[in-house]
Length: 243
Image 1 (cartoon, rainbow, N blue to C red):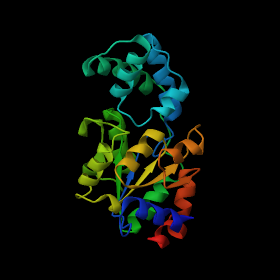
Image 2 (spheres, rainbow, N blue to C red):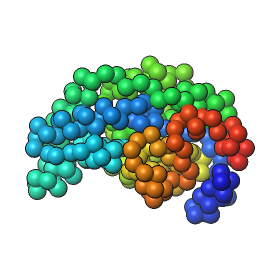
Image 3 (tube, rainbow, N blue to C red):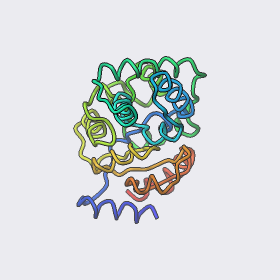
Image 4 (tube, helix red, strand yellow):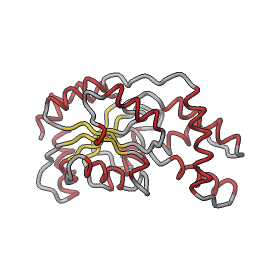
């Protein structure tokens, strides 16, 4: 299965080989089991502005810049356009609610996986649609042994967020001006998978949320795992031997 997935990726993208020098991790739902908190914060904050947002909406739009999600929801439900500054003010409310909730735990298996990746001589990088500085600071705290500050891409680094390829292309640039076949994306959300696919990077989906596997596969995932622990368990046995 693994060798066939890599072969299909290479054929579809016109590359000769997959030669990863960096693994680009999404943050929410990948590094942290934080999506339940995000769903609560989105629903409560948007309700204050007359926007009805469900938990499924929160999962489906995960990975996009928060201000982009808000502008789309306002346009769809209230029929008006708002500028980025107004969307940011609304996003600040969501951020305040999110940080009032219990701290989300590190996803089981992710540190073990980063250790294996580092031992394989590959960089660990983070590419997130978040613009919340406390969360970025927490990456330094929890993953500083594996992820350097210059290898973190946030909403501040791009104008177009996921599902555009820009965040992951920026991640490759920060990792040393790498080419798409020199990276591997690890994502858990359809918009993030679409971004990795659009950037022509081999994209591994880890379905840590409530969406069916089919949504991640339809978004362009090359491989899918049920948990980060499973991906870690298969890194040496199934991923590295195929490269």
